[in-house]
Image (cartoon, rainbow, N blue to C red; front, side):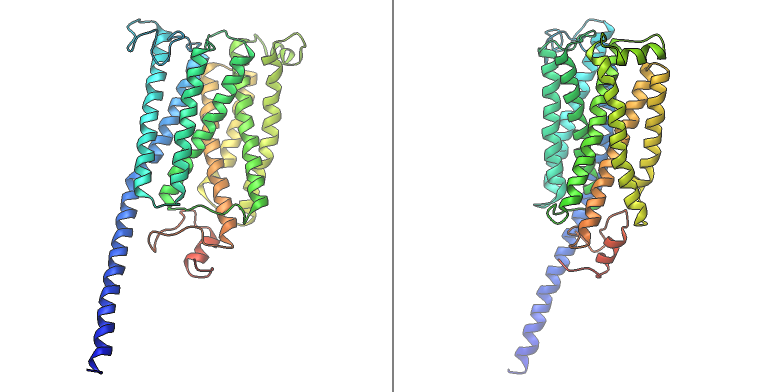
Length: 368
């Protein structure tokens, strides 16, 4: 009996341990498989919202914001307008696509909440995206209800609302892009306390780039409301004391571009100095160059509508790439002290393939 007991008990324990390990591995495998369609859906939501934002810019550029009158959420007091006016069709289409965006983000939030564990990064970013999208709808409703959507509205309130509206739009894109990125990679939150100076620098840098977009919306509004007949006339408007305030504020946009570009160059230089390559950092210099070229063309060609739309599209792509690259840099810095994230399976890792992350995944770093 004394000889049998020691051999029987460990065998049973080993059987139990084996079943637990197999069950955990199966759960991890199912979780990983379940994240694949969620990741595709999350990236689809990002692309869809980019398209909605572009259509919203088209609404502003064509002066169709008042196509549904001062009614919200109804259009001219009815649920489905029957008037064939072009401005009504454009504005109503924007409202329908924006409403569908609310549904898509709500599905993303619920799906993400069910597929991720407590404390996972996508949960926080998905909640932030839902809140920011609610703010987006609120700003749009206030613009309509306060009658600030007229095609020739030159009031300071209109400019302020548009500026805040576009700032909130960029934050929404950032939250959606981070949600899709973290779902795709299985990333987890990092501790900002471990990298305080880098975190502060990143926040300030992204804020400066955010200011580029907000001042750009003011410049675009000025170009729409006060079209110039020549480049010389446009420059004279910017520095004339008798010009409208929107025209004199256009100079803030190139100033913000210079300040924001310093952060972009620093970010790219940091990755290249460490000999770390990623899709995000490789595309950032290209999109930045395209943006500068498009901005110059806007000034030379007096900002035609098609060029404004192209400029906005590249700006959205550039912003998304910059946010993702900034997040990757914070993860890379955090990885030098603690693991990047909790892996659902032994094969999960960042697709960027940072050297530090690879060192940890091979057991070279501290264990969690």
